[in-house]
Length: 216
Image (cartoon, rainbow, N blue to C red; front, side):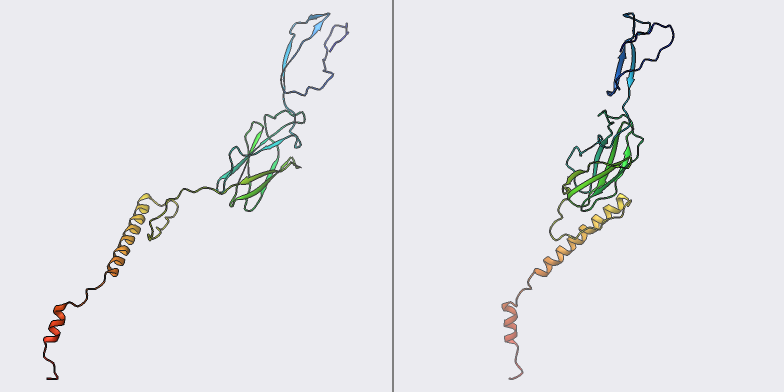
């Protein structure tokens, strides 16, 4: 950028091209080939307003499973493909699938948004987002069945009652103890019922034969 002005005074220097790259920049100003006082001048270019066509939805870092929050990150990007560094925009999101909950949207304050929902059953889900009322490209997510680590109860043991939320630990211990006692009592009763009563022995038969009959 050159100027041939010879008049002493103040000047506004305008770049002939629009700055499109965010970050630190430096402008060197020379007069008659020599840098003027204060040159070079350093300044920072900030990202522009986010564009829905450039912003991107990032899939979950780990394979999502049922019963757990599915988090999707939205990175705001301006029209020059610069990642934005702040939010403060309107963002609406909705998940579609076999059993999807309502989406929760959180502005992280650094140019990204966290979008979370919960899948009730395994299957294919689709997240649709609208940035400043402009529809974005949908993101497809496959949710797997969650793995639950549950210990199997002994065969024949009755199921213990489930205490209500907030019940003290003593109540839970009492329920477990009662269930164990009930199972033990049932096992003992079944063992006793399985025992066969002893048959009549020889002595009982002999006594019956020795007794005088009424026919004599």
